[in-house]
Image (cartoon, rainbow, N blue to C red; front, side, top):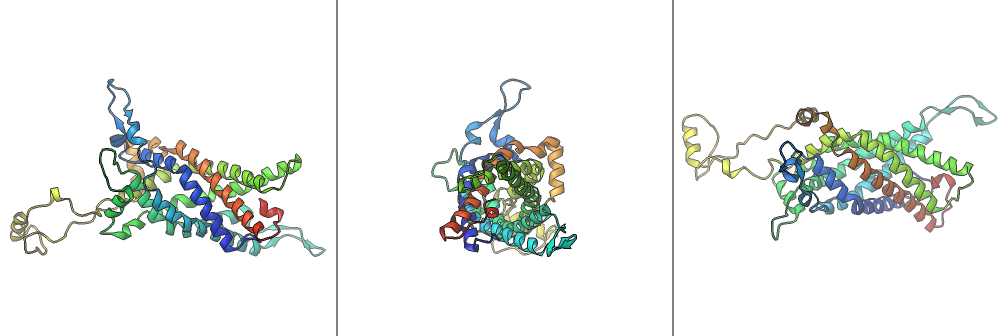
Length: 363
């Protein structure tokens, strides 16, 4: 943890950063989800009037309701971001202090190097922080991505998209945590790539400004350097991990399937069920009206590997990179704002209490 920041500082700075980013870049995230959806062609494109021409994008449908589901994310990201940064700073501080120096010692000073390289410590700290954060964030991510796909364009007085999504999980609330492994599986390599690059970029920019005599040590400079470093690192990590993100999106969109009751159109009549019971073709209890008790077998869940192969079969390997460019752009903006606001916020809070800010705390 930063020497001059309390846990409250870190929670508040992280929450403000998350709230700022959610409001500004959420529409880009919605577009990315729709691009990666298996129903993209059916919902957001129309057949071309020219033979053999590519389908025409239905822009009205694609860009409608870009803030659907934002409420659930804001509610969840406030505690999850606070938990992430508190864990990240704490683990990073603990590992750095416990990291032994390997090398010669003379004159009461160490002249060696740390046993564990700093990028490893940053990756380990971010990985632990992500596992904690994802446990809080997963339900909101599932609600968000399913709400982003709700189409209320032709319905008057339609129920809120988030409310519609929650209704699908009424019978199985634990389904909201389906996708935790997929979310953690995406975020762990993402943060493992992003944070070492982020910390390294900060040092490189700081050293450059010091050598060129442009260093000011102001809060604004700190925020801009952090934003530039985080945005650059985040965009690289986002593009590299796009295939995992595509699979994660499919898993979370499928989480709502089969949790909102049986399909009434396909349900057999009570008479048919009784006839089958008599003939030994089905088993189990029936109610007083002759209707079969719930016997529908739950749909078998596909593994991440199976979903990935399915995408390749349907769209080729390029299907695994669908939305990658858009994800890279919104992650550059989002990460830059997120970490820029976070670090500026924690420094501001420390200064407000009259704490002296160490130069290392500025970067």
